[in-house]
Length: 309
Image (cartoon, rainbow, N blue to C red; front, side):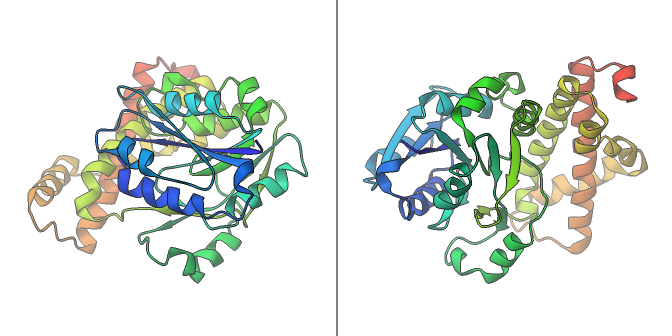
């Protein structure tokens, strides 16, 4: 088996179904790739949906009886994968027909590499592959973070050598993928950006209806950022996890007032937003992230000497 596409999912049945349908339409030989689904304890009928599918390629499904977090879910997928190369995508990612072929084109040329492709944020599903603007953005994506599980790939043997995803990150959101990417690069695995291996990441916008979920993720991300920094206390990682938000947070006044306003608006059935409310919510997200970062620094015992690097 050339390649395994590993998808960890939790209560995203409808989006996962769209993601699978796009993977079933790949122009890569169907006998040379498989899809490995790891369900992290979903309760929305994900298992039944997956088991109804009759794909052209091999499709395998594994399930945790309860939620264990994205690191454990993806590690199970890696261990079960039969492909020499593993492509990671999220369960809300849609892939064009040439997606797998583009990842494998580089893996067949180079042995020890990470292939990162653009994950273009979009709010629509239907007709997404006709999005010329999205394709233009992909062609201009020269930078971006390395080894983000929305769209990245690596040989299984290198993932195993690096020790897989660190499960200490638990159920929280963020940084576990970048931490593994850093370990891979420290091993000498080189990163190559392939802008042709693009995919579309279905994102709900920053409407007020979504901010309660965004607040929770921002807090989780802040906590996990501290753990990432504890494991790799370098200037580069310190910059990457936005330590500056701790300073910015001191400049944000009226936080308790903003919180009351946002909670009141979120509780209303209409949840109509405005530029002022969206700005307020964005500032509050900075505060929530900084709050999570402070909590994580204390929780993981990051000492002053490490913090001053």
